[in-house]
Amino acid sequence: KEAAGGPGGGGGKRKQLLVADTVVMNPPFGTRVKGADMGFLRAALSVARNAVYSLHKSSTRAHIEKHALGTLRASKAIVLAELKYELPRVYAHHRQESVDIEVDLWYFEPPEDGIVGGFDSDDDEEDDDDESGDSDDDIGVEE
Image (cartoon, rainbow, N blue to C red; front, side):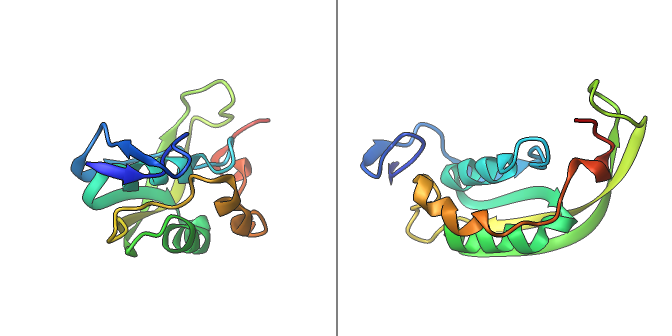
């Protein structure tokens, strides 16, 4: 499969090394490293031919939808279910034994033309002003 753009691709044609019909993922929520979840979604949309299913914090719903449909050029972005996700204490920066986090199960369809946006730094500028109000505080994380 040939694709335009890509990590370090600079907009030219590149050979797609990984292709899947469907991607199912539970990415980092992007609270410790801002935008980490969107990097995972960008990669998943680049790999998937048909669908991406992904968990994201419910508090970021408006931002996820705007970024997926706008910057990343997803054909569809639909919340399939609202869930509670129990996050156990795994890392030293977690303060509590476990925390219940409200998450959305999303369904995304890759762009019809197969060209995912967001690989150029200019693509993300529109989202810099869109603060979700999300923080580590609601998942029991120390700085």
